[in-house]
Image (tube, rainbow, N blue to C red; front, side):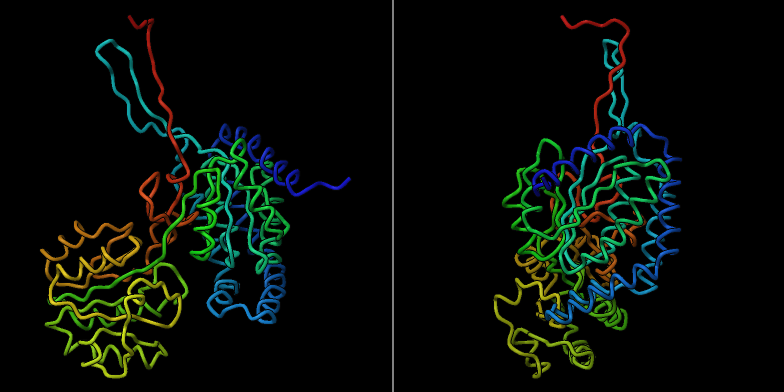
Length: 420
């Protein structure tokens, strides 16, 4: 009798949990060797990976998959090399497991401290991006966690090829069972994963906001996810306007438009708007960006369409941009706090006082001074990779790397103390 979907997912969860207990006891050398070997085989079998990806891309084009999702799905040599580099970078990072976070002595002589430990089994449910398969596997192996990967149907061939390479390589290096891959696209597998609280300790969804909200609403397990990536760049009255142009172009279209850290709203101080906005808007339109602006923006650049209240609250993930002219610094911060999603926000300014106020007053996972929001990424932050980006405050925030995949436990040393 064939396995049901429930039995299949439960079997993988049990295997990952048992493997996690063994993995957390291995030396960092064993885990690092596995990661380096995985990197080598990603490059060695890149033709196989590209062939599988071509099948997914053809299916995506045939079914009308949206352009931004096609962009996320596509794998070329550069992306494959970056995946291998993710593995190498994670291998080179310090081992978080066993790190003593704190140790102190009580008046009764008890020595009490905390030590980092793996969370357990991480269930990652994701859409479109096959590089997630590699990033998540790398971080989970390094941090001693088991992982169950369930990618979307649009990337099933790419994910299957990558997962098989990673799993087979890891097992040859002595890391057995820690990486589990759900090779079916039936959505019942997702429903099973988010209900298995006895075997899975954390769920990380990556994909559209509708998808993430659905997982958060229905999961029986703790979920780390992010809200909409409604990211802002505020061009201050004291900004270097050449720098501001470069940052704004990069934050919107210089990397990719369909990423959660791309700028969706541009805020400009009224004192520099007449000089800055006309040429900035022209550059955006030359790049195919559709502009939606407030009344003052439209006066300065009549081609801009009127911005609605909904525009300020929208994560476009597309070649669209909302623009608002603000009278002062406080109004810019108020706009970000009212409409933003606490993901990534930036100020461009030569004023030290304003830069420090922005860092203090903007309550986002990543706050920038004179740099593009597109750097909010585990790879760019030196974390090697990321499991996801969290806009929550518990238990991690921003790009979720090795530390975000750990918890802690108390360790207590005594010499015969009893409580009275």
